Image (tube, rainbow, N blue to C red; front, side):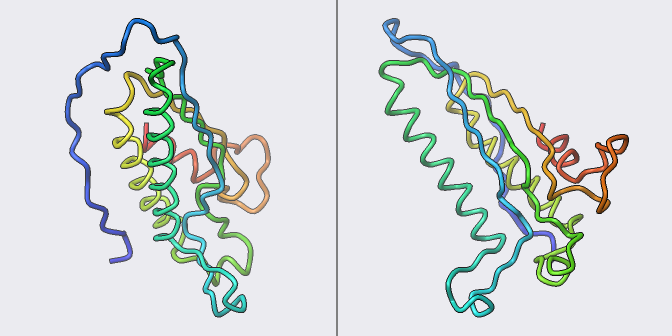
Length: 168
């Protein structure tokens, strides 16, 4: 199937975080961008220097999750870190308007949109047990725009806006 099968994480109610009284109030912020879901780079096309695809993007997001949780657990002794500010800074899907990308992208952007929204939703669900509150903000990047030339009056004609609405 062209839509990736991603095992859903079932949402469950979590207890409020209980922290010692001595910790200082602070929040965590995670800013990330340029995941480029849909981008496909085959190693044989670039002299076996590197490769990239949906699975690699997913594993990198999982590594971000693991590193964030390790950092939070390490710092919770001194800081509360009850709130996570998740700042999504654009370019989560790869541009499909460039001629090269039309030929090399793993899927059309409509399919990429569905797959990336699933992965980002799962990422957020995995974060829920670790925070009392998660605030998500984002900016629209240039890679996910639908038309090649994006006049200001159609600034919302963008795949990332759809992803943002799907994950919130």
